[in-house]
Amino acid sequence: MSVAGAVDLWKRKVPRRYQQWVIETRLGARRAIDAQRPLPEFLVIGAQRAGTSSLYKWLEAHPDVVASLRKETEYLTARWCRGEGWYRGHFPSRHSRRVASALGRPPLVTFEASPNYLFHPLAPLRAATLVPDAKLVALLRNPVDRAFSHFQHEVRAGREDLSFEDALDAEAERLAGEEGRMAADPCYRSLPWEQKSYVRRGHYAGQVERWVRAFGRDRLLVVRSEDLYADTAGSYGRILAFLGLAAWSPASFDNFSYTSGTPRAAPPSALAPATRQRLEAEFADANRELYDLLGEDLGWGA
Image 1 (tube, one colour):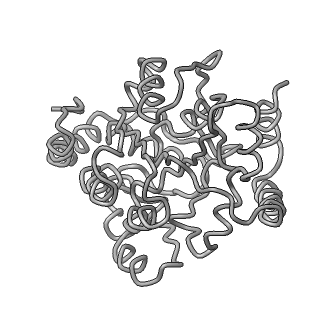
Image 2 (cartoon, rainbow, N blue to C red):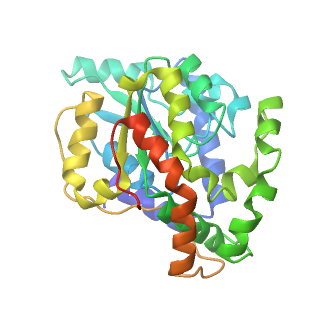
C-alpha cells in the first residue's frame, strides 16, 4: 500500500478528534525544527462541494508538489488567530527544499486547499497580506447542485434537521448578523456562515470579485467543476499549466469527494423539480453577473 493510501485508510478508521490531536502534535514538532517554513505558492480557495478534495489529492500526487499537512488548514478563516507560525508548520521545511535542489529536482511547490476561503469576506485581504504572490485556483459548480450537495453533507454530518426547502426559507434568518460579527472580531468563527449558507455561497460574483481586487485577475484561475469531472485530464493539465508545473498525470483520477465518516442521517437523494426551478430563478441574475466578470458564460440554467 502506498503512503497516501495508508493515510487515507487511517483517516477512515481513526476518529476525527484523534486525527486533529495527531496533526497538532506534528505541527508543534515541525515548528521546533524549522519555525520559518516557506509559505505556499498557491491556494485552492473553493468552492465548497465543488471538487476541491479530489483536486487536492491529484495535485498532492504531482512529483514537484508538496501539499500542506492537512487539506483544510482554514488559517485565513476559522483559525486566523492561531498565528502565522502555526500556519507555516503545515508546509515543508527549508531543508527539504535544499535537498530537492541538491538532487537536481525542480523546486518544490507547496499549496493548501480550504474551500471556505472563497466565501469568507476577510480571507482575500488576509491572503494578499500573507502570500501576495500566490496563485489561486477556484472550482465553481452549478450553484443549484452545489447548494443541494451542501445540504446533503450537513444532513449526513447530523447538523441539519430541516428539509431542504425549509432550510432555504430559514437561511436569511440563520445568517443574519454573522458577516458583521466576523468583521468585528477577527477570531470569531461563524458556524452558521460555514454550515447553513446553501444559497448565499452560490452567489459567486461578489466572492470572486473580492479575490480579483486583492490579487488581480491574472493570478486567479476559475475552473468549472462540471469540466473537471467531464474532462478531468484536460482540466488538470490546464491547472498545471496555470501553476507553472510540469505536465504530468496520476495513474488514475479517483474521486475523493469528502464525506464526514459514518453518516448520522440519510439525506434525500434527489432534488425536487420545483425546488430546482426555485433555485434556478434565485441564481439567474447572480450567474449573469459572474459571467460578465469572467467574460465567459458558464452555462448554468437559462
